[in-house]
Length: 136
Image (cartoon, rainbow, N blue to C red; front, side):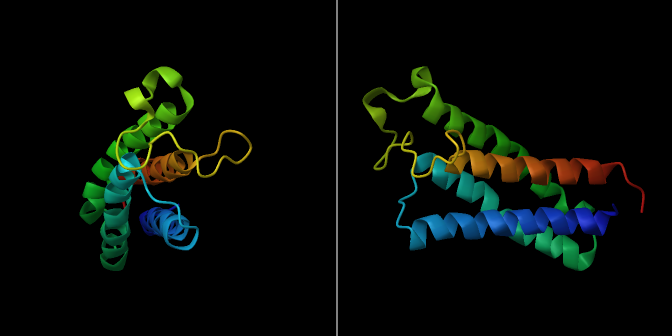
């Protein structure tokens, strides 16, 4: 797979994640918690970063995406563990106006919104890393 295909994949996943988060908040009425906002702050710029890199066909231009997606993997993982591991849950059950432990969706008993975001960040990160070693 050449670099432009990997850039497109990263952009498409970031766009899908952004639209999915907006669907959950704007159409389903799920209010994002504090950690959901952190994930949005890391995901939304990826649409612009990878979109611009794709238009310019420049993998070097997409480097900030590698950093943001790497931080996003860690953020989503922590948020997911906060939902699923009781010892990581904040005292009093809330980290802000909306509890970060609330599971608006729980498909198959393990797929929550932070899980979906984490999956998107991992796909973007891997797409970018595999693009780094390619000479084109």
